[in-house]
Image 1 (spheres, rainbow, N blue to C red):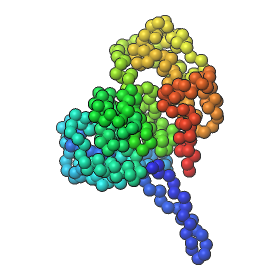
Image 2: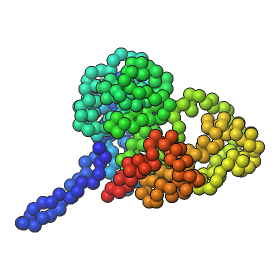
Image 3: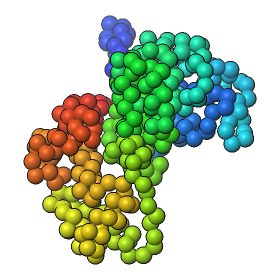
Image 4: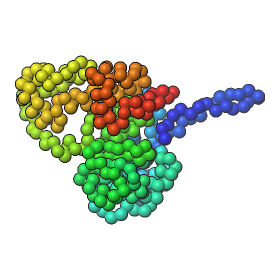
Length: 350
C-alpha cells in the first residue's frame, strides 16, 4: 500500500510513442473518531500524518481523513470539548491505511458498521492499525485470530479471554502482521506511526519526523519495563549529571568496547553506585542499554544496503556477528537479514 512514483505511461501521438508522467495518488490515512473518545491518540495520528512536511522536499506525503460513523455530528471528547468529523465510514473503508485509536475495552460489542468497514478496507488491501485498546475493534473482525497482537497491558488479559484465538503479547510496544498492526498503550502509538513511516519511506524520513516530535525514532523493549520497573525519583546534582554524561559519552563510542567500569569512570561514580542509579533511572541495566543503542545504530546501516551483516555488526561494536544476530532478533523480533530485505527496497525506490 505504499505510495510510489508511477511509471510513465506510453501515449501514441502521430505514430510516435510519447511518455506521460501520471500523478502519484496520495496514500490516504483514515483515523476513526467517536463519541466519548480520548483525544491523545487521535492527536498523534493527526500530528504524524496530517501535518505538511516541507522539510522532506518533494517526498509525497499522506492525506489524512478523520472519519466517524456519524459524520457532521458533534462528538464529545474526554476533557470537555467536542469535535466534528467530515467523513463517514465509507471513506474509512476506501483508505490505504486505517487507524483505530483506543475504544472502550469494557464496553459492549464493536458496532457492526465499523466491523464491516474494516473488513471492506482489508479486502481492498488496506493496512489496518490499532492504538492501545483499538485492538478490540480489530479483534472483532476476526482478522487477528491465529495471529500475534498486543494492546495496553491493562487490557491484555481481557483481550486474551474474549478472543482466545489471538496470541496476545502484553510485553511489546507493537506487533506487525503486515496487513494488520497493533500497538500497546497510547504513547506506543507514536512508535507504531514512526514504524509505518519507516516502512513506507525509509529510516531517514522516519528519523526526520521523530526529531520534529522530539522522540527517538525507535525505542527498545516493550511494556514489561513499564509494568515491572519502578521509576525512582531523579534528584538534582552530580548523580544524574554523571549518568547523563556517561550515556552521551557512550553514544559517541558505540563502535568501541564499553564496560560498566568505563561508564562508571566517565560518570565519576563507583561501579556499584552507577549500576544502582542507572537502573533506577532507565529501567534497564547499563549493558542492556548499550546493546539496545547498538542495535538501533545498526538499523540505518542495514537499510542503506551497504556492507555485509558482519561488517554492520562490527561497525556498531559487537565483537561477534552471532552475538549481534541474537540481540537484534531479541529486540526487533526479526533477523538482520530479513530486516534488510524489508527496508532496503524502500531506499531503492525512485
